Image 1: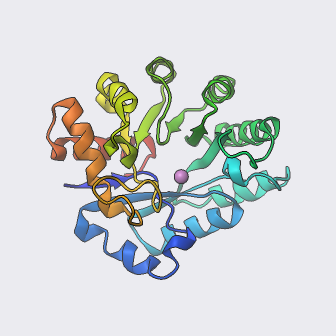
Image 2: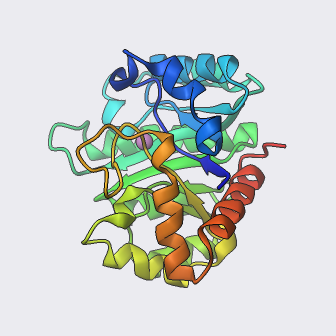
Length: 255
Ligand code: NI
């Protein structure tokens, strides 16, 4: 299988002991491309640096809603400068997260989200959106920027919202969560979703798929996501890997 893990955080401290070895081992595991999004300025810089070190790694730069507490408007200039790097293919990950009680206030998260969507529009880049327990507000913010398209990563919304997003030209991507017992809702969305709108990801080091739960996640396990989607769609895992690879390359403009 040839796979594109469209969302993995190799700048995470969970990879401090063996980051370069883990990344270097990916091509022999069939992982041909990896997109590493940033979560704050330092993490975005680290993502760019990894993309410089590995020809199969690309970066996105952005500030995650859970990490936006000390956001200042000048950060946009820093993100703009980072995004000028040729291996930066998106703005992300950005969005809204109402799950964690000590996250920054909702209005503040929305302000930061809007600002980064404006940057994406200015730069002509797609966005990578994180939406946790914020479905209604997230869609509202997205709709306020009709010239920006992107991907909802680790999609957890309803079928109805998925239909709206597809109409707006967006992609949805799925993690190891689709292999869990309680994944019924995601599988329904996948069943409906046009095959050209699906991407696969690990969200490493988090969200390890079955049967590896409890271990640290890495891109070598993304095939489990492709296998699960293949089952729902009645395709072979290889076909699913191929199609989601092409979707990712087209979406991130990777030639
Ligand atoms: Ni993530």
